[in-house]
Length: 134
Image (cartoon, rainbow, N blue to C red; front, side):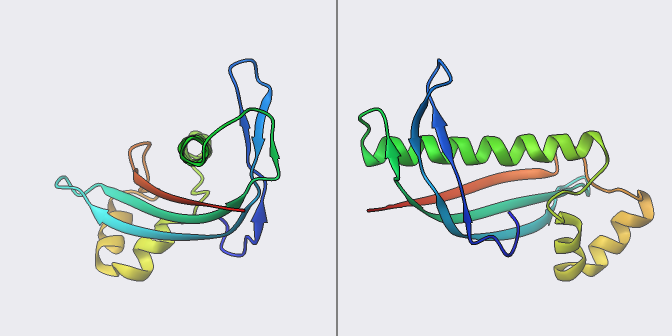
């Protein structure tokens, strides 16, 4: 979810940890929408659009299957990276900055209460759009 990412590899694996497909993803477009829950806790919803090209296919799969597996893999990687950051009190995706820039009054209130306002539940919905190109 780096802003300047141009191309990043994505490998899909089967149950035996063997590569089923390689999909380099290009020009990911990430939109972060900060919101506050009823209790005042921050939640950040992500909308990610990515273009992928199949460079290696070791198992016969339909485009629909590739999209579904790529979507699940990307979401899993985002959530696990976020969880690892939370263990170390690190905002790896700079989500707090999104709140600061778009909802300053809410950000100010949050940081008064807590120096690190993110929790494990701060990462909300992740909406993925994976486009497979030939």
